[in-house]
Structure formats: structure tokens, C-alpha cells
Image 1 (spheres, rainbow, N blue to C red):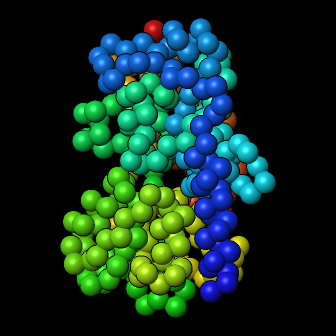
Image 2: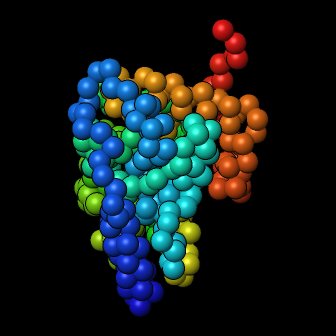
Length: 285
């Protein structure tokens, strides 16, 4: 029990640090989901692109204890994309509930925060080419007998508000009780306390949560492969074609020269077998 309390305190401290806005950071635009937006000119002029990222979701993006800046797979990708565009990257914390609102309000230029590209979301914002694909699964305590989504009838599952995982689980396990939280660390706390029987999200996020739990001596395991697959992509304001195309070109360049594979291997070696293959269009007119 003491280990769980320590974990709770540590995660809340990290989340509290992440909630503070960057000093002096003004909105990057004042456009709400408009067609024909052109952020590229403003980004080039100020020499900075602002990404909405996760501060509490390793290995995608998190702030380690004793540090002040985020690190992770998406952080490295965003930094390299900015470099190739010719500007610096700045990071603002977002979560599934506020990331599109922050994009529409102009607080950020792009969302790079474990966002699955869906047809429903594509009606509201534009997406880059996918840069990652993941599989939704379950995480349970080490002594749990749960191994499949089909066993969730009458069980309690922890999720994060605004995530696609919730709609998937409601369809595949209608008999399950859903506990919704603001962040994955607080969802993990509910699992470790015994308030939830399982936690459900993608393997990438589950891997980070599992590592966090193990550091505190808690035994959890990932089960039930194949609940749902989905591509992660970068989100842009609707009609922001110049920025989207610039980012896509940079992503393809990273795939061509091996940079993407190196970043992928740094964060996913031993977790996922092979790097995701970014779609690369031929160079030329």
C-alpha cells in the first residue's frame, strides 16, 4: 500500500509540473478551425512551431522526476520535424479533452499527442501521414485472471476521458463499467488501488504505465491483443494545408534517410518488433 501511495504522489507531482504553461507563450493564432488557414508563414516568421504534446504519457511524452522539459518518442519526432522545417520546437501540454480546443484557439500549431486519426476526427481537423500504429489492449494486476475483453462483463475498466479507447470498449464490452479519468497516471492509480479491474489503452501507452508501476514494485501485465488498431497522426487546423504538407515532406525525409527508424528504435527497442513504415511518395515533380 505504501508503494501505491508513493506512486500516486510522484505522478501527481509530475502532472502538476506539466500543467504550468510556458512563461510568456502567447497564442500562435486566433483562428478557429477555419478553411484556408496558413500557419506556415507565421511559424517561419517567428522561428518557432508549437506542438501540443503529452507530459504524462511515457514513452510518447513525459517529464521525468527532476527535469523540467518533456522527453519521449513524440518529443524527438517533433523536434526533428521542426529542425527540418527550419524552426525550433516549443511544447505545450495537452490531453484528450483539450487538445483540439487548444488547436482551434491557436494556442498550438499542431497536435502530436498519441492522437488516433479517425474519420470522425477528420471532419474537424486535418491529419498528417500516420507516424505510428498501435493496438488497444488491457492492463491488469499481476494476479488477475482476466485475459480477454470478452471477460469484462460486470468488471470495471479505467480509461481517459475523450480517448477513442472508450468508444471501442463500450462497443466490445457493453457489460463493463467504465471509470473515466483526466490522465493515464490517475487511471493507473485506480488499477493499482483495486478500484478498477483493468485499464485499457494502446500498447505504447500501456508499456510506459507498466514501467512506471514496476519502478514502484507493482506487478501488472498487458493482455488481450487485437481489441482495436489505429494509426497515430499529427493534427492541424482544418485547411492548414501548407503546414501539413511541409510536415508530411519532413516525415517522408526522415523515413528516407533512416532518422525515423533511429528515433523509433531508441524508444521502442524490445517493446515492438519492427519500426512503423511511413508512407513515402516519390521525389520529383
